[in-house]
Length: 106
Image (cartoon, rainbow, N blue to C red; front, side):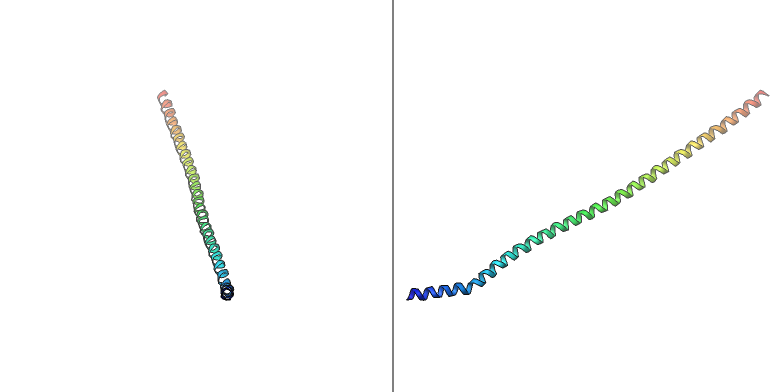
């Protein structure tokens, strides 16, 4: 009879504690899921930061390319201007030389 009572008490305790055990298991599963989600959020934040850094670098590269293009254009303009001055100077010297030669022949 004592065994029967003990068995009844054990079964009653199992029935009463079963919902708590299930709640504990569910809580553990939820905790694991939340940790996994938090890890994924961190990965997404890192990816977002990398994308933002890439965008900044891309914008800087475009600005540098534009500045380089402008510098090349300015350098070409300066070279052209120097060549024109040199040609004009040569023409002026040639004209003076021709005038001096004509004067010397007279």
